[in-house]
Length: 208
Image 1 (spheres, rainbow, N blue to C red):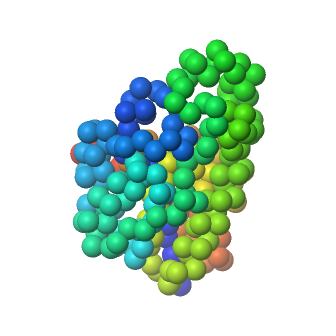
Image 2 (image 1 turned 135 degrees about the horizontal axis):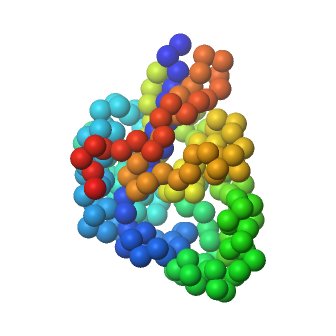
């Protein structure tokens, strides 16, 4: 048994990333730099010979996945279960705005407490549950030794990696941190059927 692998990629940079704005599930396009990052990452990810490429249906993830798919010669499909955490009333706001308008919730963020973001948004547990369901459905289509690429988002990617590897979400927040734009994690299946993190925050060496 060689085990299956999931490569979880965060999308390229957007203007909201550059400006420090909360995106959540706002459908924001890649910036010019984000397009460059996706193009730089594509050959390295294609070299992993993915059997499947699946992305969040939000444009920033979809466009990143399409860049990889073009080089890999594998069609990219969409699954909304890999969307970013919904941050409710925080969407489009800066970090300073959130700290000023939602001080209690901002304090919870500093301690890694899980709660529904932006009053009407999701918790990390919510994201982990839906992303894990998406990953399990994807894994059902993979044969032993095959690789699938999932293009997702910062919080969603970490939540998925932690859930699949049976790592507590708070521990993942403390130990792993987030993936950079167009950085990725490699998750490998073990001989006993569990999962381990084989690489974290990997990137194309020539990317900006």
